[in-house]
Length: 220
Length: 240
Image (cartoon, rainbow over all chains, first blue to last red; front, top):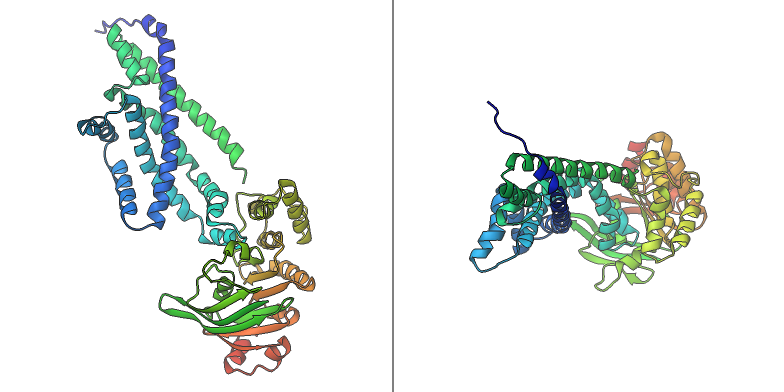
């Protein structure tokens, strides 16, 4: 009944290509996290402290990022913007979509983190003569960072996995590369099985690194 | 010298301070007593500019705290503040807690800031806790840490906002002793407090706040011995 013959050789022969694509995946996930953290932090602060148009934009961003399919967000940056004449490379499209999505999720994490820090911490910092900027960067944000650390780890795992959608806009990250190789050789199952293992290993490495880093960072 | 003239403070429509006039000369220890909600703590926040005011002036060593163009960050370096909920920075060790502001606010070198911090921590009896995180310190130790942190800025004034009210009874003594030590060193201090024995023994003057005004201000002997205002008499009889 099972008359499918497994052929792993072509997959193993193109393992270097797959691993290289895995690095691309890791790269775009890491970059989108950096951008996601910067924008997410800004969105959280804008939503907490500002009124008017900027706050509306920030709220709309967070709402859309969290409540629409990630795939649609990717298509918006790819085909949506393309339709109005803004053409970007697949790399930029995926980076923009991932960052947009991560920023939205992280903004809510950051907001929760900020709310968990008592106001009196700011007062204590300001009473020592620190500027508002110093109070935030030296006292508040390091504490918030600890609170959001594990959600942050989850988010980068999510970014790695979600970057696979990139193949739908022609981006040759791990899934895109796998798809291309698989359709050339018709060893579709074999290719995607090996790629799944590569994704798994990438995620495990991230989780392990995150655990080591947290032990170093948070000694209190 | 701290000079307060006609100070009024509202939270929304609620008037918390209703025209405060007060001079605190250098070297004085002033205790402020009164019921909760009488505006005692708010006055401290107005003195170091953590709260805006609606009328009047506060001047510290000749500088108008609430004037436009006043560099409050600079001004606050002269005024240490100690809070009811001690507010140690949980992500920093005791030494880092104390060394941070000298380093980033006053621009001291890392080594200098560490020296200052170690000296101040020793001064408040935490010389053996330099590398400990606040979570491993008792409330009383954390409050002494907060005092050391304020002192590391070499302030001319110290403001204490009910520094002992959040502490377990057996820990109050060590913090009061530290405050006494400061008073003996000649520090100008304003202490909002519920510790009547501290107010009586350590202060030069005691101010009794009632519903946003200073109802009575005098030497501790007179405030506790021959209270004139009816509210003060009632306040004192309630806590005895």
